[in-house]
Image (cartoon, rainbow, N blue to C red; front, top):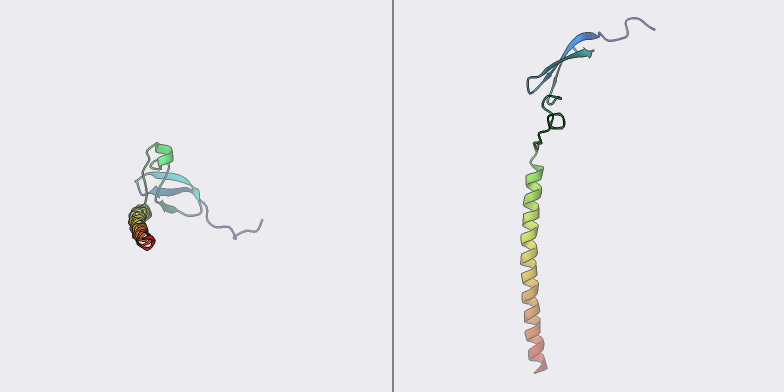
Length: 94
């Protein structure tokens, strides 16, 4: 094995989570910061929480509500047009 080509390995490297949990492990990086760890991850804690940082869920709900109202308006317009057609056809039969 060649010498002096491998990075420095730290046996006491610290992994620091956003929740404040500190884990010591071996790594080539002395200190790492992470957003989520086993102490705060919903899978390990059993708590479900939604991390919707970009607002995609709210946007989807808004779009579905808007499309539902458009369907109702469209349906009422087609019913009105059908009624007008019936009146015209009734007049033409007379």
